[in-house]
Image 1 (cartoon, helix red, strand yellow):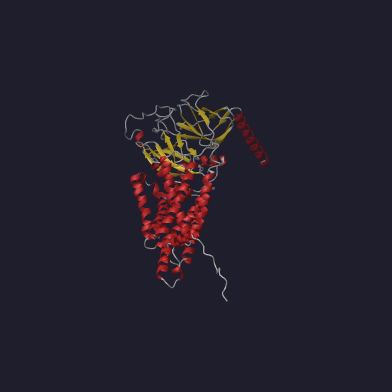
Image 2 (cartoon, one colour):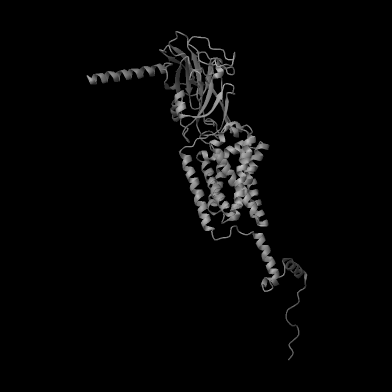
Length: 563
């Protein structure tokens, strides 16, 4: 009996799978409410999507179609029009239902030259739930639940249409801008969420799995991170820091505080890079010039971390290089439109000139104060950048440049002031921390890590006046914890080793020029020193020139020896 039941169940499952495959290959997809399913679209093929047996308590339905980077088209009708279709890698439609409607039909199309794979998600809502995009006046669809995303090197911007309050099935939607009381859409609130995909993983399967994980309201609230809450009077636009090569999903959840209900817009994802570009696409991020530059910087940083104070001139060259190169890169980027490789080359030349200049200043004047200030400013910059890399940097008060930059610079200046009391210890600490971070940046040029954004976010803000509005939150995952540990180990071991090795030596080596002057004065006044009797260089040169034109007297006698 049990075998018979098992056999019949197996046959039923096989038949069901055959029917589903037949429906898909014949141009028809069947979806179930509240569930997701994988979707495959052939080249230039149009597929009919169907939802049968819709319950009577469902007022409207949203459909989401997500692909990794290829565009797909979703449409209310088989014939495509601008006002009834949408094309994109994260496209969705909202279907208000009629009073007696029990089935729903729409169409999917592949405009690409190859087949498209992705995932489709169906979410049902009732009459108490707000309607995402129900008060759309900017985009083509009448009701638009989509999030529109744009990105560049500095920031990623999302925009969406305002929502409307819920209404009963088959009724006319409430007016959007008749009044601003609690009985209108102005009571709605919008929560913006962010969800990071696993680092260094660009696979399509991972994206689909995580899209399905955060498609609904409950899943996004549970797994995502809420960044900001917007009122209905706020502009429906939010900016984030671009993280090239890192997958991230953005979602907007509209809430109705009066009815304690919520609904989700269609989540949108980005890697802040292009999968089809021939140069610097998502699989080949990072230019050769950048890798060479930071590899050399990492090697120099490792040397400074453990031997910087002992080889003081080499340390000064590296610190002067970093100080001048950072300022020079900001300058030429803001005032010129040169190619990136050209700017990086000029930055390297400017940094080398700055390093040589700092070494020459110390060689000529022997000013420990100048060296302490430059090295202290570099450490202060790292400390201040690290402070604003934490959630403190996303506080609304620091979105104003007039608040951010004075606070940032104040933290930078505090470190050199501490150095005045303990100059040697401060210099060795700067060598360990800055040298270790240079190693992390060298690793970042080959493997993505969020630690590079400690300083990169500050650089972006210095280069782009609009970057202050962006959220600078970045993922902190496994590779970041490993590299943080590496940085801490390098810094601590470098500082301890140098303090131990330099404990019995002078605080700072003397200036070679001052030592030469002292030695010259000593020779002038010490008559017992054999070098005292050596003529000056000018006298020796004059004597050599005179000898060239002076007739030499013959040596020995010309007359015979008298007996």
